[in-house]
Picture (cartoon, rainbow, N blue to C red):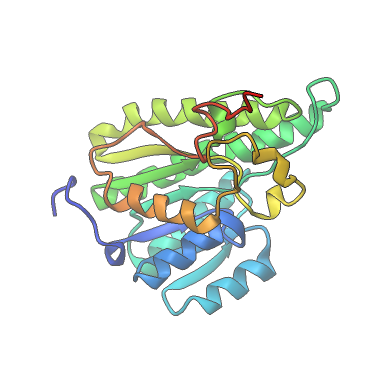
Length: 251
């Protein structure tokens, strides 16, 4: 198969981080329904195990703290041992801290960067040998609209997601000779446990004044893995038009 051929979901072996709930869970569910082989990972072991068991015989769960290099190696090795290869990595695990820059402790700031950015870096490094062996690969890194613009009260989160955006572009250039595509996805407000405390008013000025659904993000991830075969280093935005501009009343 040529590296630029459109792929069927059923041809893919995928490792997903942050897969126990939210966007990760929705993506695992969609891909599993279409025949992908999935290694689901998280630190929420009970939730992750239940989800994996509910999705059928081609989905397995592995504990993975994305800040731990050894656990990353173990997760990739487990994927190869179970399925024989690794075609796609969805670097999706992340946390948020709702604090302004003057109120954020150094410890809290570092924790957000460790999980949201350093974890993505470790994931990319861990996946490279397996993807080189397979002759192709795609890595999708979850950034955010917070990687495209600033938000008050989210200093650490914004810094981490801009970092993911930049790391994606640098990695795409480094890995293009290996037929490994690296892309970033930039959701706006999506209804997940992470955004549960955000009020509906937070999206009232968007051109599409609603929260997104995790299923909508999952469908974009599927497209990026299987159809966007001439894209690398690119940003895929799902935000109801939020970064395009705000819809403000004229009167």
